Image 1 (tube, one colour):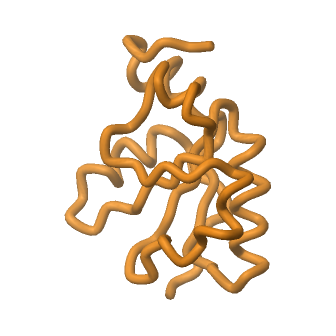
Image 2 (tube, helix red, strand yellow; image 1 turned 180 degrees about the vertical axis):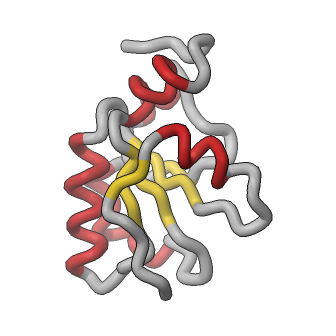
Length: 109
């Protein structure tokens, strides 16, 4: 497991998603939020459910945690790092930043 920066920008994620060793996107938003917009390949585990489902996280790929604005995902990133997962990063600005700077077709809420 290689230590990753604690946060990455949406531009870096857009580049990394194209790589063969792309990170796993862990979306910690609630199901009703995912109905509005979501990354099709994301692993969707609401923040409150994560402690009981942490075993579902892959151990062989880095993880980028995503939420609406980056606040919940930062808490999850810090929690996972405290559990020993140094290969976890937070997506700064969340899906709001993704919509504003990468894909304006994404609805915001």
